[in-house]
Image (cartoon, rainbow, N blue to C red; front, side):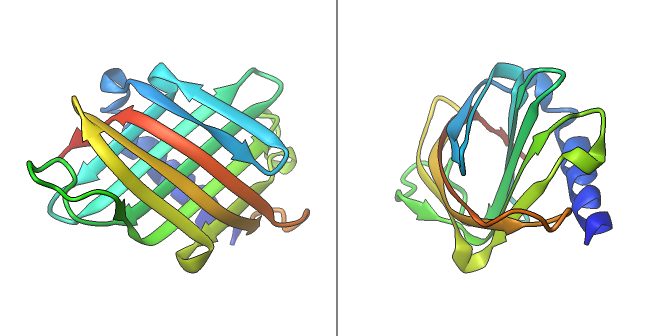
Length: 161
C-alpha cells in the first residue's frame, strides 16, 4: 500500500513538471480539521483528451508543515464549446496528506475513491477549470487516524493535451 501511494505521488509530480510554469489559480477547502489554500504555481491541472482523464493537484504550507491534495477522474472534454455543466467525473480518486516534509513517517495520507469522493467540474472560463471536490477519505499509508470529510473548490488554469 505504501509503495502504491508513493508511486502515485511521484507519478503525479512528474506529470505536472512541464505544466507548473503555466499553472495559475487556486484550490481551497477543508480536509478534516485542516484548511488548505493552494495558489499560483502550487496548483496544477491537466486534462488528457484522448484518455478523457482529468488530474488536479495542489500544495500549501511551510517547511515544517506541508499539505498536499490530488484528485483525478474521467469525463468528457469540458473545454469544447457547448459543454454541459456540471460534469461529474467517473472513477474519482482523491488523496490528502499533511505533516513534516522532512520525515515521511510523520506525513499521514488519506485516500478516497469511487462512491466516497465526488469530483465535479462546474464551469470552464478563460482556460480555467472550475469545480468542487467533496467526500470522505480514509487513512492510507500510515493506517492511523480516523476518516475525514473533505470539501474543496478549485479554479485553475488547465493544460489540455
